[in-house]
Amino acid sequence: MHPLLNDIRLVAFDLDGTLIDSVPDLAAAVDAMLADLSLAPAGETAVRDWVGNGSHQLVARALQAGLGTTPDPAMLERAHERFLYHYHQAPCVRTRVYPGVVEALSALCSRSVIVTLVTNKPQAFIAPILTALSLDDYFRATLGGDSLAEKKPHPAPLLHLAARFDVAPVNCLMVGDSRHDVEAGKRAGFRTLAVPYGYNHGEPVASSQPDGVVESLGELV
Picture 1: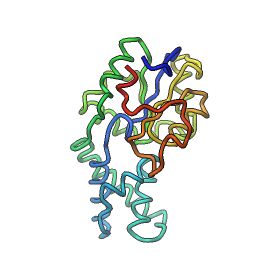
Picture 2 (picture 1 turned 90 degrees about the horizontal axis):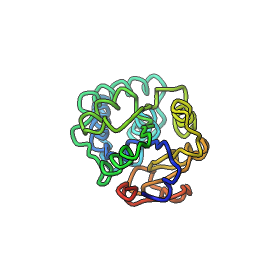
Picture 3 (picture 1 turned 135 degrees about the vertical axis):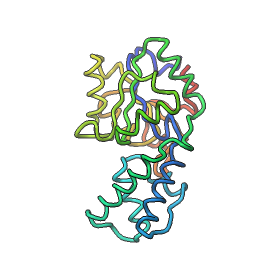
């Protein structure tokens, strides 16, 4: 397997932009929310640059763009509720698994590596999406952005998983597509691996200086 996996006992994967391309469904929910507020649709291209910091930030960025100003807290909460409503209706219609993902997850599990998921997406969406995409059996644990008091780029979710499985951070790897994943991994003492095809606010993820970059997770096999 990939040299970065030497002595690794636990791997924490990001979800959106790393394992799956979820933007088509996220953008549909964002545009439906904006329509509820009589605002113009944002579209997939814009949403790709807004994803990565959780649903509240996604909605805040969409409102900022649609209004041309910062939304007040009450409006943001109303809009967030509408976004969640629409996303709940269809969280996995056009979402797809990236090439190489299934092969990588299968290979890690076959080698008894503990495979986990750490995403800033709300926890309620994780199981339905993983099940719909036939990925649910690979993960020993999943954490959403609302599972703990802190979310990425804070290291708490990663340290929580390392402690839960009694694995030293030095023997753990964080795999993601954004600077927030790399930062969380570094702060937790994990090794870090990045993919360049995901959502990183329009910036090359290599600029965050992960320990390694792979074009496809199939390279881990």
